[in-house]
Length: 369
Image 1 (cartoon, one colour):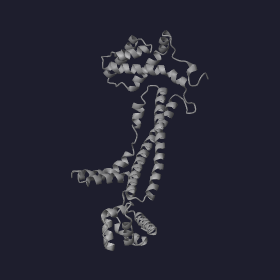
Image 2 (spheres, one colour):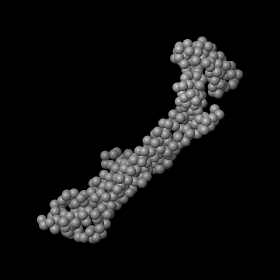
Image 3 (cartoon, rainbow, N blue to C red):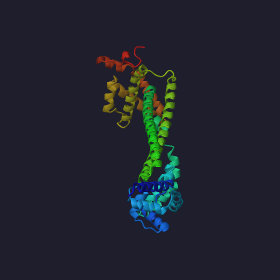
Image 4 (cartoon, rainbow, N blue to C red):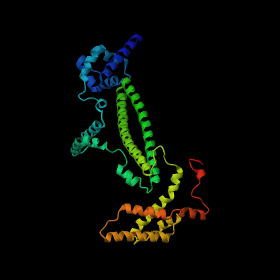
């Protein structure tokens, strides 16, 4: 074929593809073949029509025949209204996660392989979906504020509670930072995919890009919801931190030192050991279990003395109950503090006997200041 005719064919083919892409339509080969036959009376085979639509190579003579049959690009753009789809495309339809989920459930129901009873299920899901998505925004975090303050941060002394609170803050901060970076990367990837989609001429590749864009949008939506939950958790532990500092007469400017943390450790462990011992004793006729006896001895407290203290406290509770009064959790906490004050220094005594030390100022974070 003459070189000038080949250039003409490429020109017409380019105009054909540009016109198709200007209208966000995806006619299949069968429909395109029918359209050409109705407009021109020519019968081009379906495979050739499909390849022409998808921008794939076709025989030069067939390309010339199609472009000549359809005429100029201007006329083609008008004729392509024939292919205007009844439904808008997937990409333009998916704006919110709720819309996507509803479309997924609806499409699954219309799948011929799905049992008919699933249509009723999908109808009920779609009916309640907006309310469920709205209410789920109240969560997106691991626990409630109540659980954070009563079950997660359950230490018996304030500085230990601060330590656990700051550990939760650091975990949340690290997760938030990692998620933020991932979201930013995904946003860049999404912009790149959208640019590729805008310039893509091949129908199948364009459809694949739409699915990849949708996947990124859903991932971004889920990541941002998780970030919102993390920020609320971060905010709560920030308030907890300030309240814990205030409980020991400190401000954010004062802060706490490692020396103060070490000084409180003996109190914390005595209170924890006796609390565990008391809990075990309640189901053992008042006797402390073996594990907590070991823990108590390692802290330098004589086991017989600790057992006597537990018996005395249980007797105190019994007398209150006999009088029709209820012992309180605060009463138990006050008893635990009394135990810690009573046995203060026992840990240092046993450490000295073993040739160890429980505190070395030169090894602290603040040095010798």
